[in-house]
Length: 527
Image (cartoon, rainbow, N blue to C red; front, side, top):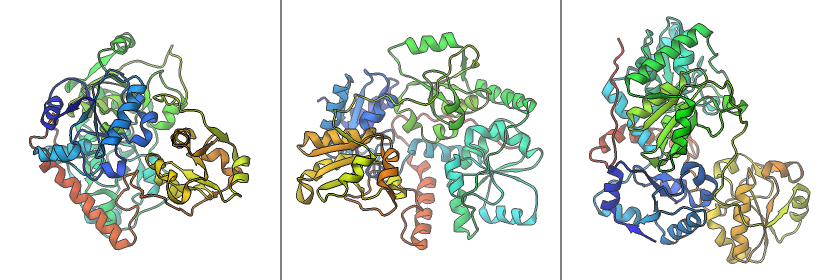
């Protein structure tokens, strides 16, 4: 397999050609140390994600891992799936660091660093939690909006706050606020900053502030958070939508965003020499109700927050769409500042057949293995020689899993062929059922008696039952956990929050001479 030296890869990152740097270690391992522009695409989920994230088969791909065998396995799978330009970083992360190049910890690093740069360049107005709580206690009327997805808002939110995910702010917040000041928060910093600055960039007349350090800062100051609340900021009237559309389009055009029609989109898609990502930036539930063919759900605030996840091919084209003409231009104006070539599809649903759902394109189908339904699984679990393995995300497993299921990352299936588990019948399960099929095929290739649960965990739950008692057969390094998720005590949790905030604020100082960084922040100070 072709190998590329670190300095040669740095030159490629600085160039304008398309390039995907895929770190195939598990996400938790990746989060400890990785290249700035390396996307996390774990070997355990490669077949399920790569066709969606790297859609063009002749895209140049550089693989990164610590173990040469992991690189070789990933390369073999990619070649089997039709990818033609696969190479590896010679010596991996260790060689990159030895060449004098920087490694980063954390996830969503390009977007997080960009958010810090935006705050620094614009001096984005912010309120300390103590000042914000004092205003709240005084009874002064303000609109409190949380720019995270509803799932995160429901987990913890400020008293009296509404959920309004990032790209929805310019659409929904001005009408709801009327002439009141607006305070924007997230869990930490980035989406607070980007959310507040979105409203300022769009030119709304209200006073706007970001809550310094978000809900983590609020908690660390000793203030109470709500849990389990669902309160989405409502849609405004048509005249307010029209005003928001005018603001968003004017801002996007000012930054050089192109607005294209359907024939132009068809031309872009027909160009086999370039990658064209097509993202629907509305809320997930709106997307699920019906969307344009070929468009992937990427809510605008999350797209800006996690560009490396949604679009790991550097220098690709991005086309955005929404129904109201607000979320897409607002998202586009941020992507433009991050160095992306981005267009907005200025077209309605009229005359276009809508799709429902979001089918998952796999690299290639898994080899066939025995499938068992819930009844068969319940019977098998009465035998001591049956081992039930959940290969899902460990965060999902912790919340709920089939009774008797033990957790093991798919990339460690080979460990089942050794020691106390050798000779058992291994049944794999996962939430969607598909990852379990790949794991069962891996096990069968190793000579194990393997099967998978038909239809996934949910389909078998009625017969096999669910449990919250975890049993881990390996470290849960398959996933990056938020600072407050795994701490054993309140003190450890709060220290993890402080460390995370320090990490975020420190990113801006690490951008000097970083290969490929082409951020150009639009300056817009609040009047």
